[in-house]
Image (tube, one colour):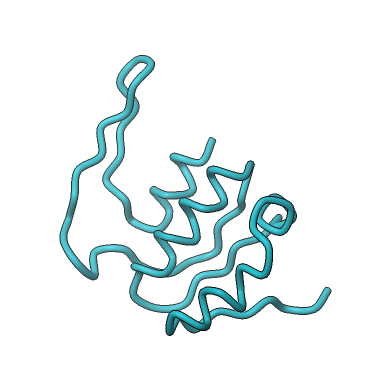
Length: 88
């Protein structure tokens, strides 16, 4: 399910049976957009892809991230990322 979300960011991924093939496109190839997290691993991959993308990304259904990673916004901000959590 999260392959489709990464593709929305511009990732070159195709599913081949029980595997997937990911082709690098170079720096700046991903573009920010709205995506939806489906589980903890998908959530973390979307955060990494969004940080690498040009523009702004919005990740919905982040409760997986909040359960799996304590103070993620603060930790990423401390590393220089521009991230925030909007209030519900």
